[in-house]
Image (cartoon, rainbow, N blue to C red; front, side, top):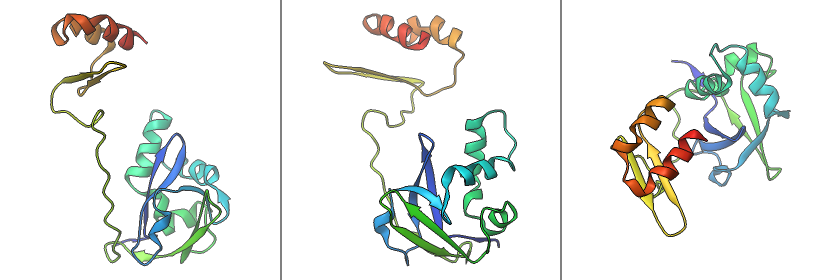
Length: 173
């Protein structure tokens, strides 16, 4: 088994947020933006992590870093020079508070049970496409990967006539 710092994060708009942490740590930090790791700005750590993954673009690189949790592996962070010692990691949050995490064996620490309610509008639908209308907006969701040309050509068979013009504009945009 490998070792890790007991936290999970997610990225949104190039910002890191604490998604979960070991139960021995105060849970009030969950959901806060992580602005520094061991007093280094998060951008420095991300730049170092991007040097060890290969991908076609920045989004794919980020997906590899987050998906394989390279950000919480002590040995990797040490070899990259992101941390100077392998036993602890300090996370600093947007409110100025920080927390120190200690190296643990993977699978031997408990995380909080964090549940997020799905957004009623954007939640996954098992259909190829789904749409919802209300008096102020329309939401169109394609749940399969389509080429833009295939989307434009297939709109007539997917959607009702009254929302086809809006869907064409959205796909062209």
